[in-house]
Image 1 (cartoon, rainbow, N blue to C red):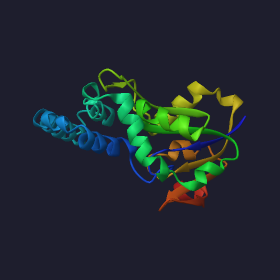
Image 2: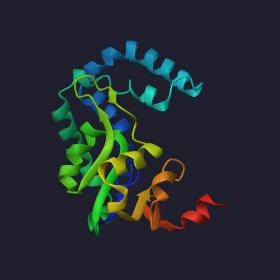
Image 3: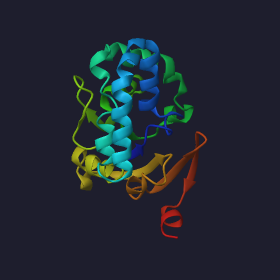
Length: 199
């Protein structure tokens, strides 16, 4: 089966959906501000530990959505996409083949936009809807390829196009493609994998 792979944040949409969702929730559920005296020191401590390589990025990200138990999650997610689904790049609607979106963003946030956009497969970071905590690994870098091959046996798929804004983090999925597209200022810029990564 031939497939195309898409990153999500700053690729299909021009923003980081997880960060924007956090801001949306603070604006729509202002009582979350009461959590800031606890949340800010915890986040800053985790950030320092991550920068010192004491904890991983996944370890840091595990605490970023701990506000989830304090909001009506399903309502918040629908409200968020009601506001922002019109920001999806128009070229994404012109998909030619089976589409797989692979993202580090939370499953609870992207499952709603998958329904609205109608792409076939979503692979993303799994979170507990009760606690907001990450379940397993953050879906980025090499983890994207591992998760892809858990979903589809390697010998059963042929990756045609890969689209992403990040040349740094998405080298592993770009390496699978026949044609690579770097998303720059919301536009698709084709490039040759060897020209970029084997200089």
